[in-house]
Image 1 (cartoon, rainbow, N blue to C red):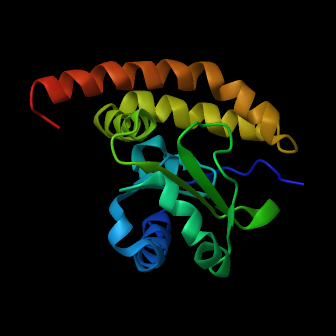
Image 2: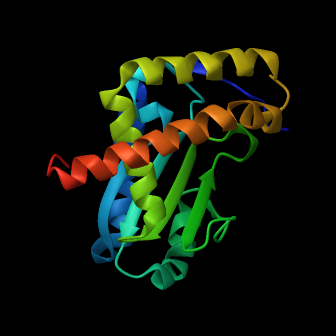
Amino acid sequence: MRRTEVAVWTPEWAAKYAEAKEIMVGIFGRELIRIHHIGSTSVPCIGYAKPIIDILIEVRDIESVLSFNEAMQQEGFIPKGENGIVGRRYFTKGGDERTHHVHIFEAGHPSAATHLDFKAYMMEHPQDAAAYGQLKLRLAKQFPESVLQYQEGKQSMLESLVQKAAIWGAEQRQSGNI
């Protein structure tokens, strides 16, 4: 059974991402276009996160990802298919003691932009990031035995932040800042 654990942000998460990045680059090779550390573990000003490293990979052809499933499994990453997001390939590592989520999209997929805008927005808006971190901490204490209730509890704020990030990201692209 998965528990809701939220930890204080640590630079160790960047090191864990770097290790996983090396593995992913080795597996996907020329198919990989870009790789990013995303999610709360990638944003120090959030302050708190579930200690799960989220990785976003952009590939040339999403259909090719199936051919890498065996190599991913050899590294402990379990393929989950689209897992609710059309055009995504999703992998988890660690079972109930989850350590990594890998989200793979074909370059240009709108969900990739959503993740990247969210991270950039949070980095540029530390007050929003800190408020989100405090909510995560409060919900983890309230629902330590229910990842679902934890996720449901932060959904409204997360949706609001994603909307803000999308508008901000579009403005930044339009002005040539990103």
